[in-house]
Amino acid sequence: MDIESKHKTAIPRYQQIAAEVAARIANGEYEEGEKIYARSSLASQYSVSPETARRAICILSDLGIVSSEKGNGIIIKSQKKAADYIRQNGKRQTIDTIKENLLKSVSRQKQEMEYLNDCLKELIGASVHFRSMNPFMPFEIRITSECAHLNKTVTEIQFWQRTGATVIAVSRNDTVIKSPGPYVALSENDTIYFITQDDTPDRVREFLYSSK
Image (tube, rainbow, N blue to C red):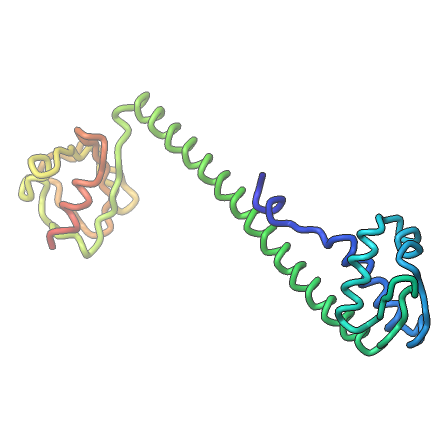
């Protein structure tokens, strides 16, 4: 059961009947002091059980809209109170509608998050599989002014010894330098491509940017 169906609540039939009768009273269809129904007649008119009709009458009676005495039917007492009830009932239904819309939104977001989570799992699985099929697929990292070893050569900073990674290419000024060797310097705006022993770029990133 999802969030929406779990929390969505229908207005009980007896409340609907109470609201409909109150609306007819508020609209002047019935005048104060007028006798309108016996309980059995109300049940028959709305095709509900006598108990449902009784509960509807109880609501109107408790609010002072009608009076109900056994054997004397339902007598209109206050059009004003009927109008007040209709306004309050409308506000309550508005709140219920807002609540229902919020729950629908939460349900949609939950479904979207589940979908995104499934997509992420598929992406991770595909990436792992692809990398297992292509073990020499390089990582890349951009050299910025924040690099701790700017303008130093791979040999000077002991790149391989400190990271376990091997630089296989450098992209500089729209030119790719393949197998650049140990004496290539790391210049700002370079992109270096490398492969690692542990198949993760974290050590390289930390080495280049965490020790400045």
